[in-house]
Every structure is written in structure tokens, then in C-alpha cells.
Image 1 (spheres, rainbow, N blue to C red):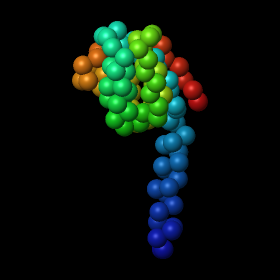
Image 2 (spheres, rainbow, N blue to C red):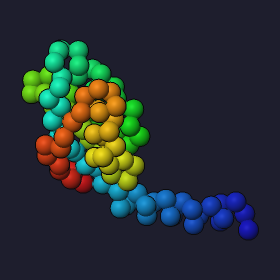
Image 3 (tube, one colour):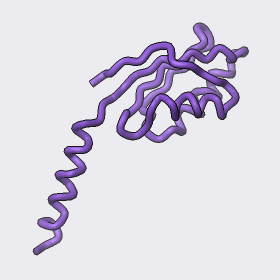
Length: 98
């Protein structure tokens, strides 16, 4: 058995796993941002979460719109990241992008 044949099942399994993953977008309310530089701190914290594809953080309105791979992370990890950065957040809206 050559290496290509023995790796085929693993490659197929990885592809099937990706088929069940979905891109999600969540809007987080981040009310404790008090200055124009706060969004940079929140964006940096969110961007460090494995699975985050994009984070757009605005001071007005005080929110973060985060697109992420739901097979690699979830909303709890995102809100935990903002909390750990000093900016607790709550879910405002969630949307599946597929």
C-alpha cells in the first residue's frame, strides 16, 4: 500500500468535516467602549480567536460584527475574548451565512 492510498481516507474525512461547517456572522453589543481607540482593542482580541474570519468593530454604534467558522469557534468564545480584553459583550444578532 503506498502513501497516497493510505492517506485517501483521511483526506476524505477532512472534506466531509468541512461540509458540515458553516460561516456564521454575529453582532455583539459592546457598550463599555468609551473612546475611539477601544474598537481596536476589541478587534485585536476577536481576531486572535481561532476560527474568526473577520471582525468589524465600531464605536458608534458600540458593536462588533464578527464572521467566523462555526466548526472552529462559537459565540461563547467570542464574548469571552471581549470580556478578557476588558469589554464585556452580549449577542445582538446571529446569522448563518452559508
